[in-house]
Amino acid sequence: MRNVLFNSVLISSLIASSAALAGAGANIHACVNMKHSPASPIKFYFQTGDRRDRCMNNIGKGASLTVTKSGVSCVNVGYVESKSSGFDCAFDESIWNLGYYTNGAVFSGGIGARISQSYLKHNHIKLFDGVENTYVCDVPGLCGSRSATWGGGTTGHLYIIFQPQPR
Image (cartoon, rainbow, N blue to C red):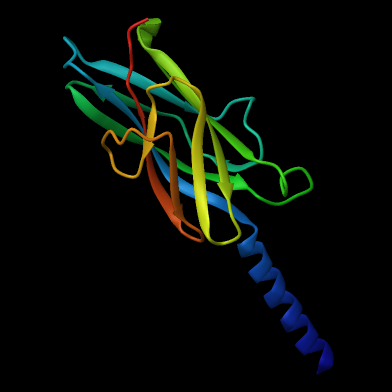
């Protein structure tokens, strides 16, 4: 009986601790804000993650978006989650990258983001690299912010908004 009780407590503890070790996670939408309607549709290709990524459980997925009008247009690039456990990642920041391009490289760019989690209080993302006039917002509209915070233990819904400039 004692072994059964011990095993039950051990399994419950492992389940609880594995949930606590999950990283900061969010559903990410990649967006472009066009100042003017394009003369013809423009197809944007988004690439999630690259060799510079560090301490990530999930990096999302590539996606494409055809833009036909001015304003903000978005596509879901999936679930992104930092890794907050393991020897290398328990005390290090998570870094995730998102890039985009169009055919003929008329438009291209990208960002690097630091994703972190304070102990069950809140999750945080901060853009640190790439195009200056790129923002991260909690709604699909321009917010002017390069960082966002959402509740710990929850899944954020974030929009990374690029404002493409012709090359």
